[in-house]
Amino acid sequence: MKKLTTTLCLTIAVLLGSSGAGYADNLWSALKSDNHLVLIRHALAPGYGDPDYFDVKDCKTQRNLHDEGRYQSKKIGDLFRSNGIGTAAVYSSQWCRCVDTARLLDLGEVSELPSLNSFFQYLEKEHSQTKQMMRWIQNAPLDTPTVLVSHQVNITALTGYSPASGEIVFLRRSTDGSISVIGTNQTLN
Image (cartoon, rainbow, N blue to C red; front, top):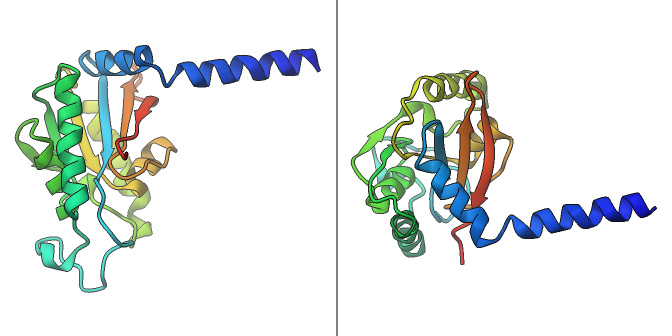
């Protein structure tokens, strides 16, 4: 029983310590070094999934950011700048809510990356798309802060972690090309 109590206390101490300023500083420092990147789930966009008449080239047919989501996106960009990252290589899903999130970060030019597109309504694409995204991550230079804006299903398929809207997921790429989550930062108030 004593060993279980000690283990539980250590686990709680680690979890409480991981939310402190030192933990956050380490995440931002890691992002500034080679072989690190972040995934961001698009900011707040009301609704669930996309309408049946969805067209990737027509924002009027999609779920889009609302005022709070646009504000959240700008605040995420401010968070990057307050941690010493004024520019980044920014890639986005082609969905309007992701492109808008990426642009409102104001960290640099946004490049669309189809392998970041949602497969929520096309689950048969999960395996091939996740494999494409992993190949991209394995071959990306990652010598500058790199930001990928995508969807919950994509991020979960890549990492096993389910982020909230606008949540930042910090990743490390190992020498073997695998990725691991080293921390997260929720941006909802």
